[in-house]
Length: 246
Image (cartoon, helix red, strand yellow):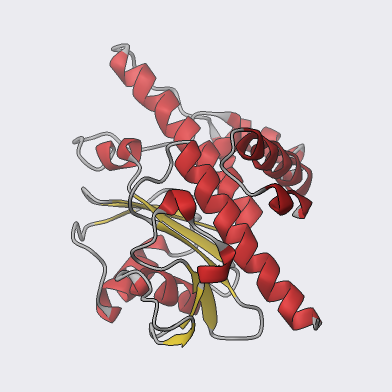
């Protein structure tokens, strides 16, 4: 088996694992999608549009180019919102994994006047540069919509989508899973403060600088990826032979 085949198999398996874990943790439901860029190609792997997210398998991943054309996996059909992924990958060569989710907490923060989602918890320093909101509330099915979302995202690591959901981007699929977990935790923390009738106190620039001085992102990602992989396996959400992806 070639190195290329091994690398592609690992990407497909990581997408399946991350998707099933996100469903288990309530970060994805009947819709939404995880993708991973294929190194050396203007293409990415993504799940079929109609497959239940709770049962995604690596064997059914589709290879799609940045224009939404299926390169491998036909006649399976990719999600209709491929412009989300293709245009972000095109605009952000540093991004290797994307999730588009309809996380309810994220949507709520696009529906409140004068309230912006801010870094509240320590791991939210990932979004210190900001969490912009794209104004388009519809499904992102057209190239120009995807281009606009990519411009809204800009250099940031997440963007909300008005009355729709969000995108989170990262350097790898394991990092994406960890960031999605922390994004939800952070949004939940701010919402709980608001529901308590109190004024949120986001992390200050000085506090975020202090946190970043001691950040061990690679170690943290490995630790949480291993934790969620085994948690999902024990819950019967993953195939037993998937555990070798450490």
